[in-house]
Each structure stands twice: as structure tokens, then as C-alpha cells.
Length: 235
Image (cartoon, rainbow, N blue to C red; front, side, top):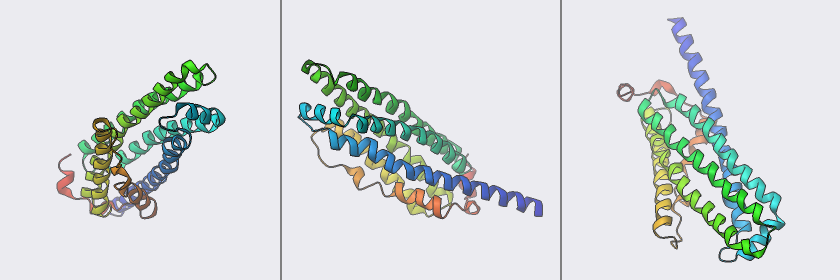
């Protein structure tokens, strides 16, 4: 009996270390994503004014290149993060945990290839004004690529939210917030495709779960003793 308890305590300790590492990785996505996907583009790209945009990128080329690196690092972190989360939540429901991994990893090649658009426009910066329409094209393609990748950035949150809700590892409301976050991203993507002039971004109001979840992992860890046998039996 003592050996069994010791093994269970060791497992819980390892799981909590994985949970805290997952929390750190998840939180790191916030500054990386904000810098590479939001801050730099919004600072340098002037909608409907390609001349000013080109001038801004030329004057801040190093910053622009760092934004590309930041966007790529986000994807590398995502790969490690979802593997760790799979290990944590696999006992809850293997099928949903696998779906979480699939949705998350599907976004990675899309996002990686999308940065080719930014690299391509860098090669056109010092050429004649005739290349302006190509630079504009690559900028638009990059924007559209983010919209497509965002579908999967949202979808993976649904199985993750489901797993959090049913696991008993943490409060159920965190799982609900993650599912709401999923809806926000997906609705934004399809809205931008159907109604490109629509100005409301729903994910700006539905992201709270993506902040609370990693903070809980980092600070509180997980408590596997509350795992529901009914859910576990579905694996």
C-alpha cells in the first residue's frame, strides 16, 4: 500500500511539474503573439497606403524581421505545449485529447508557410515602384493566412475546454471560458471572410480563459484525485 501511495504521489508530482511548465509556455505565447502578430503589423502597416507601409518597413526592417521570428517561435512553443497538455489530459478522455492535438498542430504548417509572404515582400522592398502591387499582395495574403490559422487556434480550445471541465483538475468555469474563447476565434475568422469590413473582433472579449488557464496551471497545478471515473471510462 505504501509503495502504491508513493508511486501515486510521484506521478502527481511529475504531472504538476508538467502543468507548471505548460503554464509557463502558454503564458509565453502572449508576449510573443502580441509582438509578432499584433504590435509590429499595426505599427508598420498603414491600410490603404502601401507607399507609407513600404517606407515604414524599410525604416524598421530589423523590427519586421523580429516579428517574423516571433511568429515562428509561437508555433514551436505551441507544438511543445500541446504535447504536454496531451500528457496531462489523456487520462480524462483520450479521444478529445487527441482532437485537441490535431486541431493545434494543423495551425502550425499554415502559420509557418504564412510567414513566407512576409519574407517574400522583404525581397521586393528595394526594387522599383512597380513592385508595390506585389508587396501589397503579399501583405494581404499574410493577413488572410492569419485568418485561416485562427480557425484552428480557436478549434483546439474546444476539446481543451471540454477536458478541463470534465477533469476535476481545476474549476469547471475555466473549461467554459476556454470553449467561449474557441467560439470567439472561429466566429472572427468566418466573419472576416464573409464580412471583411466588419469591425468588431469578438476574440478581444472572449480570451479570458487563455489567461486564467495557464495562470492556474502555473500557480495551483492540477489535482488528479478528482478525476471522474465516468469520463475516464469513455476512453
